[in-house]
Structure formats: structure tokens, C-alpha cells
Image (cartoon, rainbow, N blue to C red; front, side):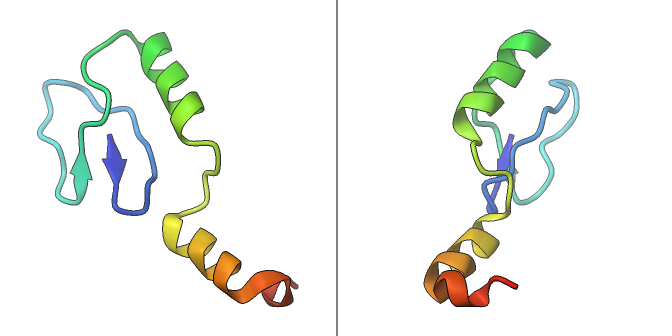
Length: 62
């Protein structure tokens, strides 16, 4: 699953998808799902934080 902040999560197929999340990969074994997450979520920081850091440049880092 992926949310609006581009964060990924494993989720059991028997459970309803929570609001704000969508299925990005589908039903598969745990190892395949983890491989998908590793390949598609290289930066675990939330999207809004990444965008704020890019917009502010290095001057925002303390």
C-alpha cells in the first residue's frame, strides 16, 4: 500500500484498505512485497518533508 505521503506499507489482503491509502502492488508473498517496497521507496521521509527540504535548499538544514 501507499499513502499520499508516498509511504509504503504491507497490508493483509483480508483487511480493508484504510482511508488515504491505495494498493500499489497486489497480493504476493512477503519477500516479493518487500522487494517491491525496497525498489519503489528509496527515501523513507514523507513526501511533504522531501518537498520542503528541496524548496528550502540546504539553508533549512540544521
